[in-house]
Picture (cartoon, rainbow, N blue to C red):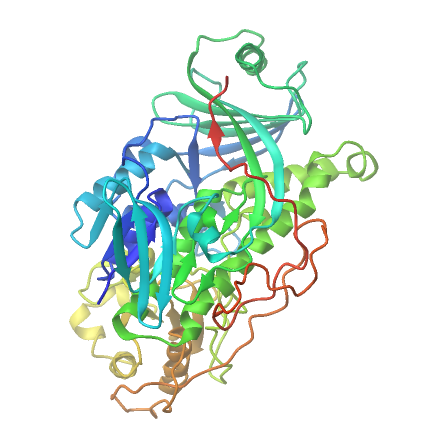
Amino acid sequence: MDPVIIVGAGPVGLALSLALAAQGVPSVVLDEGSGKEEPRPARSAVLRADMAAMVERLGCTTLRDEGVRWVGWRSVRRRQLIRHTPLDLGLSGTEEWAEDPNAPSVPAAPLHIPQHALARGLRDAIGRQKLVRLVTEARLDTIEQDRDGVVAHTRGPEGTWWRGSHLVGCDGARSTVRKLLGIRFPGRTAVERHAVAALRTELPWPGEALLHRQPPWRGAGEEIAARPLPDGVWRIDWLLPPRGELVTPDALVTRIRETLAGWCDGVTPPYELIDTGVHTLHHRLARRWRVDRVLLAGDAAHLLGAVGTQGLDEGLRDVDNLAWKLAHTWHHGASERLLDSYQSERRTAVASRLRAADQSLPALRGGGGLRTYLLGAARVHDALLTDGHVGRGPLGAPPAYPHSPLAPPSAEGQTPVGTPTGAPVEDVRVTAPDGTTVRLRDRLGQGRLLVLLVAPGTGVWDRRHWRTAGVMPRLEAAVRALPAKAEVLVTEAYPGAPAHAVLLVRPDGHLVASFAGVRPEDLYAAADAARGGSDTADAPTEGTTENSTGRSMEKSVGKSLEKAGKKTGAKAGEKAGEKPGSEVSAGVPAEVSAEMSVSAETDHTVDMH
């Protein structure tokens, strides 16, 4: 079968190729550049703990060598420390779970790494991977589709035609793939601007990140963020006025000296300036993320970045969501619902994040208003920003997909647990089939469903005994009968789950359903829904061990997305970006109802002149 064609060799495209290779799917990555990364310490990425763990599973070693996890987060307003949040340095997902329900949760530490170091680590991993072919100086100019695959043409030293099963555009904000498909990319331009500097110095809170709002010294601006990198390097961001002056090198040096002095008792400590830039943030969302066998991911599909939201982190979530669905389709074929669910889930999640940012920005950035008339409003805003930066709340929490087309039908045997249906599962310790004890997250990304049994006390038993005792034989028989490959795992406890509860988990770590005990029919129906269903056949009755093709399931995507900006004359319901006669895949979510301003600017850090 033909490989998957990936256009774009940034971190998202490279990660997707490795995620597909981990599931036995070959790919060709088309890189229009030379394959060399320019070192830019001022252009760094913040990854939530679960996405950092995913990248490490792909074989990227630079996260440990050239990234740093913060030990804490400080929120300061004027001269007062508003909030000090310790961070968990483990790889335990969104939050460290304690068995004591009254114990406070500790956010998992985000990982901060220069983007060039992340890309280099992914390229090194590709160099060890036989299923990925990386082609440099290959600029895409044509895409053609038929019912069996995709043909792409690239310009370069030698014009070449490529044949693939699918094509994924990971080619950034100016995506050629998106333009060739005629998909509109509405949004807001220059939502925020930040002056950025990477410098080596000593600050009073080693290893901790800082958000300083309304600093008391003159010319500091409204907000400053400081995030540590390895080897004593810090990335410092100054929020610029919406219509401020150009940031000259002299002006930036003045900002640096005044800021360091303000943080270090009035004395500017020695520092080495390594890199500078201006980072401009845009909010945009492509109207469609899938046209038949061509899909979009990363900045080609969305731009976001304000108030703690990290665009690259969301791009990696696209990879986590898409890779297992593409792999299942490549190996087994699939209903259209499975690939449609990528757009339904991820586009809705990103739209929700953009909506939360757009609703919060006026209160967070505006003067007077709520700050003046509502007691404690400033603290509420500080908490909202802190949560966004450390990966919690509406601006930062990992997405859930409660209204996914892959959600199973309701069943009498379902039981609630501490994780809502569609949300990422907790990274509890589990016993694998070979008897080893690992983290649940270590078993993700391999293209198979996970069936987790909550069995208190099994940790003190020899595996030879408990694998053949109690409900285990019945559970393993039910798992062998599922319509998709699955693995049985056992855990001593799971938040909010009763003894003998059974959780079905997707390959990307989102909860499909949880059941009170072993219920083969309900488990089968949930697994069939998670793989997108099929055309015919019923689930087996209890005790049946033969595989069947499963049952198809229809489920609505959910309510329409809200507007993301001001109207500029586009009609509600307009199918923007469709070419005359083009085929549009089924299951497309409701469109953004208003067209917004479009600019040629991209979301990146640029050199200052």
